[in-house]
Length: 524
Image 1: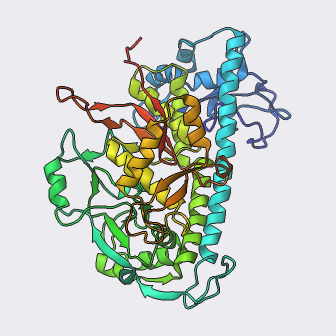
Image 2: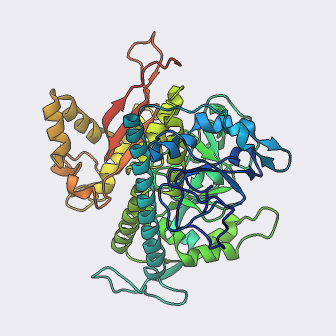
Image 3: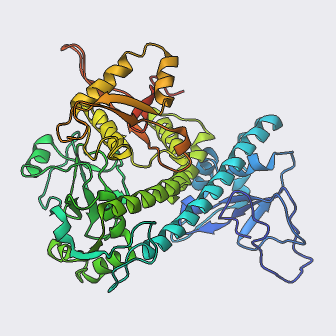
């Protein structure tokens, strides 16, 4: 059986062998350890046998122990994989090219043994956690397969003018254009050499674009000074709705810029800004299609680090349909992506598995607890892309963008974005709500009314329009946005005070619903 793969041994992962009376048969409750590995971190990995089928022996690559006191077997399994126990085992590893561990020395490690009632509670918690991880990963895999199939069938194949599957009411031929013809901006990131800074905007690269998200690691990603950032963006700025496409190294990953902030990119990322005739979500979806990815791959330069030149990228043929059909296609794939995120991606699974070991020993740092909290939220449907260090103005703009996406129909915003005066009116309505009951009614009231002040909306200018804020019925359909904000920056109210930062803020459809302030952290 595969001892390394899981804290609880899978009794079905066995091989058939001849019965050997000299071998000792394993029993339920036995603990197995791997004897060697190429790294000390992987030596002495444990697995507990909770059930078996027929006569079972342990192979020569493992050794086993049989406890002489009663344990809750789930607790025993996860406790032996916890950080306090694993740190003791790693120290015992000996070797140079391959590391081994002595079963006699394993007898000397200290383990944590609460009473059986508490063991059962802790064991059940981690058993259920593992079940949820498996369940969500299976569902995520299912939706990934659906997405892959629909990307092939909802875009025309090469040489054809209509896709295999379409929404009802759309029959016209699609047009083929060159990518450059449907963009108002095509540019790559900075080619310059920049000095690292302790604080300042992030300088990101292709590795930060993964699975449709911009992933920022505050502990390892580079930062540059404000002056260098401004110099990079002398002639252009990144805008919400821009598409980021990796063109060096890991080629073909894409993400929509939902909240332009203080970060920029190196030349390994290209910036694509759709023109008025194309929506961002449709273009991103087409970039993910089999045909576009093949075109990208065919244009890769053959060098030590493969890349696609902007000139070659601009000539890639794409298909375009009416804007109404684009919106439906973009919305459909956006919902699929939300469902995949909801049912947990591989990265969230790994983070969760990592944090479960830490949680058996508590948290020594505020940052560890904050990371575990964010991971737990993400595993329950909150977005993977974290909004880091936004100002109040940026948070208001983020809310305005989401409101616009959810209300751009002709009878609401008429495809004209909300301007700041309209957002101020909305915020003023919230300020006038004095009680929690009134606020709850606002959040769950589904719609709110404002007077249109955007002159571009000639149909509704000066008139009252109703905006959809939040609808509980849309949660299961993946239509609501659940965002995590880390360390938001709030402006000081007095000149003698510094700007202050919060800890974690949770947004539903752009609205700040929860604000979590962590206490001052004191180790021990």
